Amino acid sequence: MMNNPLDFTGKVALITGAAAGMGLATAQAFATAGAAVVLADFREDAVKAAAQELTSAGHKALALRCDVSDDTQVAAMVDRTVAEFGRLDAAFNNAGVMARIAPTADSTREEWERVIGINLRGVWSCMKHELRHMERQASGAIVNNASVGALTGNPGIASYIASKHGVIGLTRTAALEYARKGIRVNAVNPGLIDTQVGHDVFKGDEQVYAEAARSVPIGRAGRPEEIASVVLWLCSPGASYVLGHALTADGGMTV
Image (cartoon, rainbow, N blue to C red; front, side, top):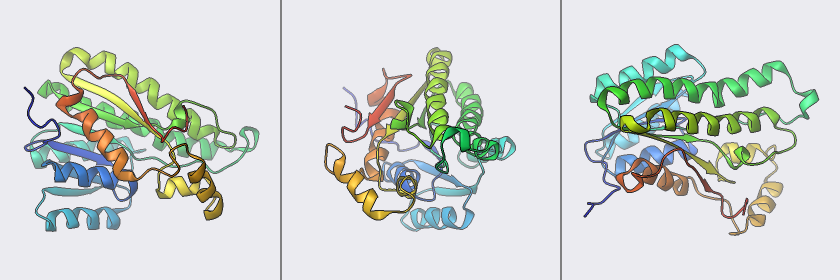
């Protein structure tokens, strides 16, 4: 019999993009489940405040500033995590940005580099350094945040869509490489979630956002906590036979 598979007591979890939205909700969920958590984000003040709230509530939490498009900062983030807490058991590579809306022919090289650098190269960089530590432990679980945009096209955000398709390819490849080393790599495909990035898709037009939320088959946008629960399950012993999978949580958008 398996004990509570969502008990992360004694475990260490690292979350990028942890200052808000799905990243913050996942950090809070891991902490509530007993894990020591490292919250990383390029917004230093916001991520420090988030970690302080967890610490004040009696949890073990550390805030780190990290721009995931900078491999040196990513290496330092993972090293500091292990130096602080002694190990790394779970990682949610969540940091990401939305593309500025423009048809493919009108998008710029600078915008391509920005989006790919954070959403795709950043996930690769995080995985690279996380996997090195997990390989030494012969254990660990990684979840990469992809998107329903990894499953379809979407006019006007080519770089974003390309980056998220790439995340799925990275996830599947790493899952195969590390399957026999005690490490599981999976992804999550959120649909429309009530986060800043979710609102940014609609250029801040709240009426259009509300209409989009109502059009989801379940009748609403998802909550960040609903993605957090998926991430925790994928990192838990309850998902011990799940690897290389992109779990879609979209309220029926792609059904």
